[in-house]
Length: 314
Image 1: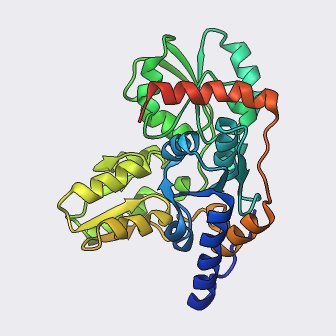
Image 2: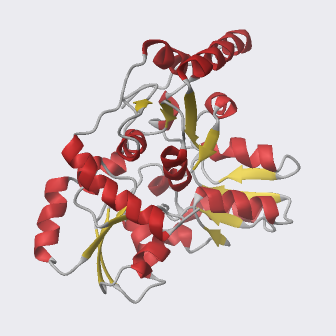
């Protein structure tokens, strides 16, 4: 697992940002960042989003270079959708343990056991797994994607918690892979209820990658984008937030008059936090590390991503 590095002081940070803007212009680059990035990364991004929004933006951009601040599977998806563009990642060690919990070989074996099933894969998967997938989805569109396919039998990979949540709203049979997000799965109901006792009027907003018993406590359950929208449009002054702590940056930016109480101080994804502005500058200076995907794998994987984007347009 990558090591989280210290944040530079404000003077250094300003220097890095100035150089980054210069390089971005020279390279005709766009900076895409996930909501779980450090605040310093989100501050300089051209677009901040969840996995679905980032996939859309990656496909639509006319930039020559995509500097992708997220975990590896996200940058892979950007490359799959833009085979002729350069996709850079500030630190290519930024992986996703949940994505690593399912392999192409394992999925092929499961498909052989259920030949009539449609494979729906959360985008939190490798290119190899996407190549074995019929259609991808994200937490924001999973139910719509599942209901769009003709088959009544779904192989769902890899997140068991999101799979359990979605299964409650469909009559389709779901064969659920037993993967999970290390960060979200840490949270316990006891932690949430302790905060609720302290702030009884605060609604609980939960990402469906959390355990089912945590999700059951939610007043609102949804993707990061959904959580942001709910908090932005609701009239409450306090919120109990059950998701990765990087979302705090956008929550406070969009609703500075509100207070957000994160359910656990341990809900920090170290893989997301490995990126910083210094590494972003280095990536654009050296044009490395570049993300590459085997063309044959990419062609198969692209179909599953394109189907998702067709089913759930902008």
